[in-house]
Length: 74
Image (cartoon, rainbow, N blue to C red; front, side, top):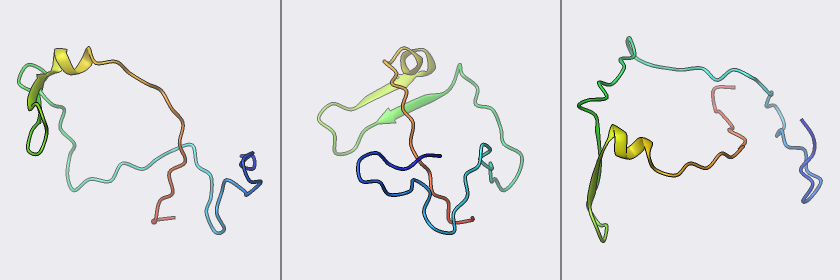
């Protein structure tokens, strides 16, 4: 992991470690959603509420980006 080119600070804060694996923490067995019944509702204080099914959600444009995630568990 290299330094941040913007200000020369190390990208890894003190007492943090770099890992290629990210733990999945759950209280039980994770279940896979039934894509035929899955929906995502965007409502509340929005100008145009919308509910998407899996096909509509999957058809949305995608953007790939890289970020640093700092976890409090180590």
